[in-house]
Image (cartoon, rainbow, N blue to C red):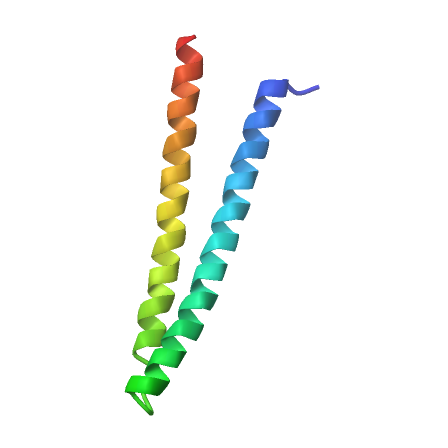
Amino acid sequence: MTDPVNRRQTIRIINMVIQFFLETFVGMILGYFIGRQLDLWVFEDRQVFVFIFIIFGVFAGLRNLIVRALKETKGESAREKH
């Protein structure tokens, strides 16, 4: 059998990856619709804001992943000290 600590750590990593993909996907979808609406108001035949807001959605997902990973590693270092 595997160690329960390793199992919990594996589950946390899988959870973090799933959350990253869901948050990034939702951010991209929201960015697409917001950008499309702004493009309809500002530009009639160009898609400038669509690309900008999709990229913002990707960066937001990456930022959330980094923040979550840093919190996890700080928590592990605190557990190792005790």
